[in-house]
Length: 565
Image 1: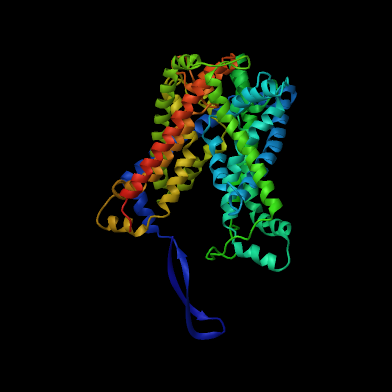
Image 2: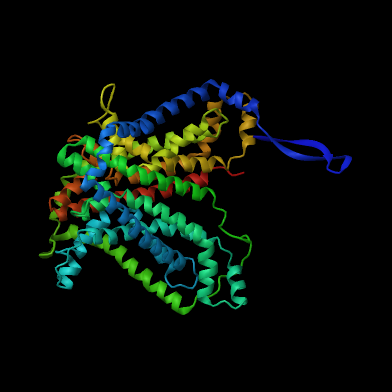
């Protein structure tokens, strides 16, 4: 798209020439990009890869059951109950997680709330935990053998079921809402609060009519993100839901307990409908966000002081939630060092010796995570570069790159089993099926990070290289690859961490020769080997935090070595 100036006579004033800018499509540029053999070949290769590892598994899930199988769904009382339970949990967990995220976001964006930096840092810790860790820790803390419920309070509490899952999902997913809402609240100009106060509004009126009113679209967007995460939550649900059927866990029970692949495909097909609808609604909502601020952020005005009642009530709430987050990590670490949880509190390293026997599963997780991270980073950067070219059908490539963001992990897991369990592409039983499934599930994050970086690159740099005779792929290698190093590192790190801690995909794809740590931990929890599971989970946490630290060091070094200008 380019611009030229069109001259015409001013209305009502013949002979008075004026001009206006008119958008034009540079068809020469389109033909140049499409005619570049290297770019065209790369585009075809990316399209085939996305079609094979994104579209084809989804297609196999949807067509594996027959039409009659779909028509039988309403007659299955358990499946309909699982669907109702999933919708109920989505509503109540989304409400409490979003409200908690809003309160946290409000607290950390007010300069006079005590401990706001601490609250901001501790709130993101659940994001780095394995998906089942919150549920597992709360069983240790609040279950029938719980440290708090039985040992401290002397209660015989049953945390399994919908109420335990509600608590766990609230703590696990409120950081997602907090991160989104913080960005909205920080974008509100403090002068608007001052103006409202000058007009006579009290503290509650300012919060209701200014802060919450301007943040309302962001809150809704955060709620959509949380709802998608809750609906697709497998790790917490499989550990703590007990006999409470949910769509996300029913698929695994069908395959693991009944070897019913068709039933698993039907269940995940049911799950895909609400998740895709929420995903499309969330993308539409985010695309029309123009509400960050009304008057700009040029003002240096400090935010007005928070009313003492509001300040200390948010402080107390954030303090309570911080304790709940701290219990997650304390429970797992303490469980790994306790001789017999709930009976013998003697410090022991026996569970660590048991976990050491599972070191090969940790190594398998690291290896598969590294493979997935490289694939996510390379494919994400390459597809972002190709969609930035003015090529025919580039919007199709863009759609396929973001599509996995709408697919739950259980859907991806079942899809890869159905797609690659026989020739000509038989991957079941190899590490590649795990690496590819995890890599393409995380592709949207790497792709969108690369797209955002490309938008910051001045196009005149590429035009200069092209005028000097560089081909499309030479431009990619010499210009964009160095500039996209940070995007690649970010995509690799996120994909690696989430692949190492993933449960919802690996439970469908592991084989006796490819057992990963999260699957081993899940089996240990199911068999009551809590101490060993806690020790192995602690090892997994150490790997996760070490990866984050190394990534930050590498990104910092990359930023210092990247030329500016």
